[in-house]
Image (cartoon, rainbow, N blue to C red; front, side):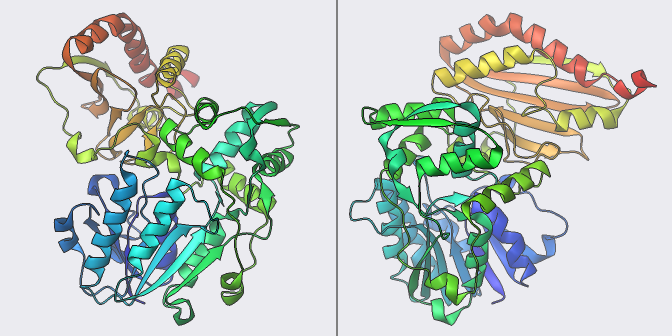
Length: 479
């Protein structure tokens, strides 16, 4: 295989699959909804082509090259909209019709394990997509996974939050549900292994590790690896709605994602057989090994992708290009400027802002704002950031989304994803040895204007302290 179409190129799986495909000698056509969200490393720019593709809009399918050899379908919406069930089905039909006009010989679809007689709405949607894609005039290979364990995966991060935050847990009865987790590195090996493999054509395979565990056993297994003692009791009285709120407030997941997860966690996801493991001669990692490998990546700051950077981690679905131009009219604007003695040091601070580093000044106020945001259904500060030192367009940064990040241009632009009666931007840029920090708020109605004046005293305190800390020449002070 030479030319491969990759949908979901900015997603959790897609970001990890891309470099492996390139390493195998493939030229990869990356499909994204918004080019501004796709960061291209210099080392791979000659091995990829980026096209914009919206699976719900047929006119965008004209961007797909006709001479592709295979395609990966890694797209699904984990309840990003109320009608995702129909949207996923129609998207699959649109994709199938488009690929039928190309020279593609194989479509590889990553689905969920659907062996239960009673499926959740989310898993039923995955099965429907599989059925629609299988009607194409190409060979289809379906790979069905259950719980995926890896640094940045939704399952891993939720387990991590629960175990590390709660020494004692009173949990819903679905923690007794059995599943068969698999490490992310094994998923990538399988996805690349089936590419062009004739024996996988027009077949579906369940992929999983060698252990069948309940969710409770997974939590306790995680605690063991981390050297933590945890006590867990399951109770039958916790409703799905209460379970969803429990996950939402304790973990980094969004409420919509929590609802979908609770719905799916009531269904056993156990592989029927391990024929694909034998066919590709893979020895899967154990659950414990997968956790250790994930923490190794975290400790070395080598997390390639995180579910938190996906649109589903936020509360709104939008294109970066729609907001990258900061409005001026009808807005409240707070502009602060300070001279910069050491531009390199200042940029380093800006590029590390948020997450574990914090906001340099008035951190307790940022945390308080995050707490109230989550209390009222927003994202709060739960997402942090994927990489401590590096940041790119499309990344999440606490309750912000990175719209633009160019260190050479010395500019970082953030867009607020917290709950607001309006829209907000925060920009940092260095020009003529001066740091310009600009907060812009476009209010929505009277409530938006009242909000701005209500928080104005806090802004004066926080933003003044922030720019002061960012422009401090700590290196000079220490000499």
